[in-house]
Image (cartoon, rainbow, N blue to C red):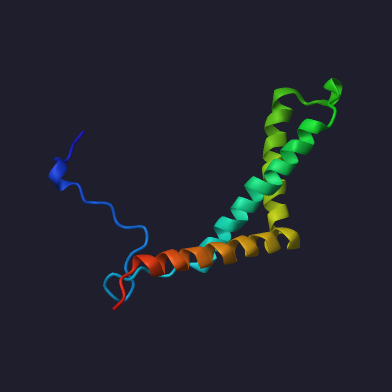
Amino acid sequence: MHVQPIHAVRPLQPLNPPAGQPGRKAPPDPAAIEAAARKVVANSFFGTMLKQVRESSSHDKLFSGGEAGKTFRAMLDDHLADRMSDAPAGRKLARVITSRLTKHLNDVTNEESPEP
């Protein structure tokens, strides 16, 4: 195995590279923010709701499915949460999160960049 000396390692690239002008950061990508917002809606909101529903309902041991049933139920819940986030209510909630996050990121970007 070949190990590079420490001086040969390249530094990490910034997550938000400068755009156009020196010192200015690129504006946030709306599509990436919306995709992240949908994941947040799916995992935080709908995923938590489905988990609570599963825990609150009574379980019949005869039809429980055992350990495999638990595994597949978790996979089903993940899939259902993703589908629910793509439904109109999930999209609306994701749009609200997207607009607020975009506004916040634009405010932070404008505060950090020096005036020309």
